[in-house]
Amino acid sequence: MKNILKSFVLLFALTSLVSCEDESDKLILEAKNDPSFRIITPADGEGIVLVEATPNNAALTLNWAPAQYSVTTAVTYEVQIAKVNTDFAVPFTLSSITNGATNTVITMGQLNTPALLCGGVPFVSTPIEVRIKASVAGTQEQYTSPIIFNVTAYGCLSQYLVGSGVPDAGWGWSTPVSMICDNNILTVRTTFANNGNDSFRIFTENGNWNSGRNYPFYTNNGYKISSVLVNANDGDQNFKFNGATGVHKIIVNEVNKSISIGRSSVVSGIEPLSHWLVGAATPGGWSWAGNNESECRLINTGVYESIIQMNNGETFRLWTANNGGDSWGEENRNYSWYVTNGYTIDSELINGLDGDSNFRYVGPTAVRRIIFDNVNKVITVD
Image (cartoon, rainbow, N blue to C red):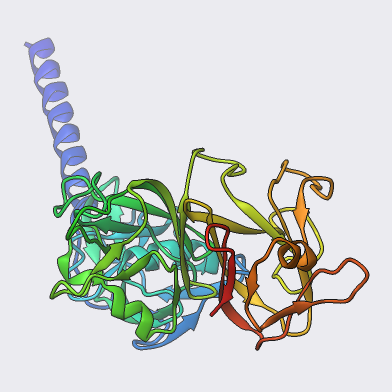
């Protein structure tokens, strides 16, 4: 009888212990949803201008009141941002804090790309929403009320070509042609078609027809555009490609505000179809280092075009080949070569009289379009 009693007492004790442990677990997982859990700093409506040259500098310094739970336990905090007025349907986590701290610093480099993904426009102050998420073991989440933080981001995201003028895309969103962005220069190699009424448009958001940018958008914003890309005058004023149907590389340069295009025979590396401009009148000066040489792209049979900033009073020369290094020994042509071969040369280009008879550019320092037409033997600048 005594042994039975002992067993009953032991069973009761074990049952009580398990019940207490279950109740303790339940208490740990109960969130109080206390409104005191809030962001203290920054204040709603503050902002920052992000600087690409200082990616490790502080951009967003956050302090918040701790989240309250029924018992003391380890809380994980996450800093989340989202596009405004989306109720955090697609949140981006910037930082996760597991050491109990209620503050963190987000750097410029950490914030820039997520800010762009949340609707940020490069170099334009754009509001995003910021909140803190609290959780215990991945459950029982609590959230602060969001604040607005205004971010001026740098750089750009991929953009998209859509339209019958780009056959790989067509007029639909099943296969848009994506232009990859690097330092605000968007590039893609694809087929462009010149068949009747074919046209295309550039879009900044995949699947969003309202994000389109037509030909007048760029001209109204001061872009210099390749001579083989014109206004389609199709009701939507899209782009029309006037070159020969085939594979071309298009470059939308948001730094110097230009749109260039040229025939392409290689996926990457030096384009053998191109010519090259080198000299103090060009952005890279008298140097082949890095990408200092300026590409003069083949836009039609025997016609080469470059859209670059040209510097008043300075000289340059054209090379017909680029071996990937110092290409001084490759075939090159100065001003005198073109005169001797019967070319009509724009009045903004004269003989440099510098000992090498290079071209001297005497127009204004600005982004200009220079065309070497070897068919009609004409060199123009506009």
